[in-house]
Length: 326
Image (cartoon, rainbow, N blue to C red; front, side):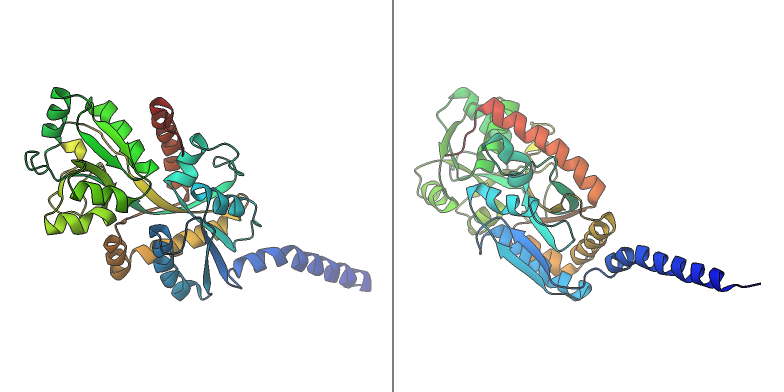
């Protein structure tokens, strides 16, 4: 027999279940409003261009506007700290890099965030290998072994232009691993180092594919080796340093997405899945390669393990070489 008390109890239970399910339903409906991606670099720089390219694809599949916000300064630390302090509600993400999430803790004091504890790994989207190039006629094309031999024969007499902290890290690891006593010449920007190497003031430069490719294509620069473990379609015919007598050499920049710590796992996975879809588009991949980014997807777990390894690697190189920000 169904009593009035039974009915009231059932209604109360149903109400309780509905209330308990409300957060899950709201979470399931994500995204319900625009999503913000903070780029910790200036508008127009490579990371910004890449983020806006990917954001175009995300808007199509997520059905919400993607707002790209530039917060540049302190080598990327200002924007990165802003994401670390943002609500973990799935509406703020970071376009992080090897600098912000691996190297900067060894280069700066007072970051304003902890790269190991303040973020959820979402997805790796691409690698940015660097290129060792020369204008010297007597250094053979694709000739890292010849470069090493020349450096050993005349220690610290071959100058290498280094326009960024990443280039300094690549240089330090190359000198140590190849046992090639080259001389570092630091620059504040690619334009300055390229001007000097093309003008003959320095014989060598280490820079991004983006900065180097046009000069390589014109014949003004000759690529001796690329710093990724494997060859890249972005520079056909250029062998990796690792295949030219420096086994295992692999120091590259990278771009990846992160979320504030505590962002719900299902939202992290959904955003990661949509990034994977974006990278699967042939046009997106082509446009990424046009700006010097080798498309590479990693999901949350794989990226998390990768970043831990990168922090160890970059930290060891920076500390061993005594690299400092200026």
